[in-house]
Amino acid sequence: MRGLEQIPWLYDALMGIADVLGFRRWRERLVGGARGRVLEIGCGTGRNLPWYPEPGRVVGVDPDLGMLRRARRRAPGALFVVARGEALPFADGAFETVVSGLVFCSVANPPQALGEVRRVLRPEGQLRMLEHVRHTHPLLARLQDGLQPAWTCVTGGCHPNRDTEAEVQRAGFRIEPEDRAARGVMRRFAARVSDPAVDRDAHH
Image (tube, rainbow, N blue to C red; front, side):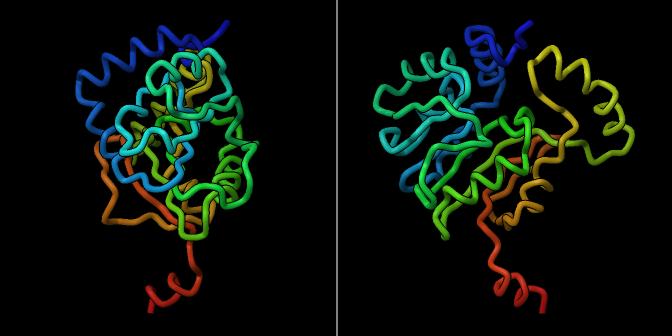
């Protein structure tokens, strides 16, 4: 059975309700800082696309062709490619910005996908991410663990107990504190590939 994330019209309807309830502000802030040539991983039905400063410079990637067909209606000028985050069909350093919104909770292999993000980003490029993460309260985190198997099955891949922000740091990115927002389990942040020399100086 397909999960909620693989049924374009249903996923779009649920996200539409979330946007009305306030999620749209998170989207606007996520993509508002995107600069240069942009890659959006897991663009889904394209709900982020109208908020980009330059939608025509965005390449949207998703493994589901049905999702991309729906996304094209929102941004006819963008380029769309069927691909998985773990195998991005782009040259090294092809993008100034990589954007991910509610994607890495469902990626099959987050370390591999983050390695691909590092590869396709220019050395000075920026990763902009919006995710829900593992709760910081131990009891609530264990509740997420208990719900995870059924939730992942129903949604078609989402893992509510992943600490994606920590995964990003383990992958060699440095999160920029001035462009980070946290509320409950929601995180929105920008990150750049760590410069060992800069990080070393910051701790002295």
